[in-house]
Length: 140
Image (cartoon, rainbow, N blue to C red):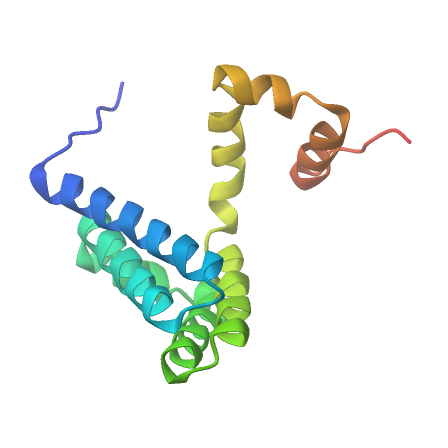
């Protein structure tokens, strides 16, 4: 069994990632405040870098299959900073989905193991979405 060791650097990285997500959410809720969105992006990226390491982070963002997501995420970040937060967040959202698309099945399995969420995710609407994303044929 593989153990996941949590040293202080990873704990700080997870905290920064969480604060980055929180500030981004808060920036969206406060009508796309560009200061909060920029702070959320910086905290998120620095948290990811601390959690998985700088070399792994650079390797992840510079993989050839991740170029589309990296460029759109970077362009969205730039647009948020220069004052176009709505368009910037849409580009960032697209880049986030493209970059982390390989992790969605793992997230779905994790969410299905949480007691209350598993009941919600068993609803036919969610079940059909999950099955269609996994590539299973959904009966009509």
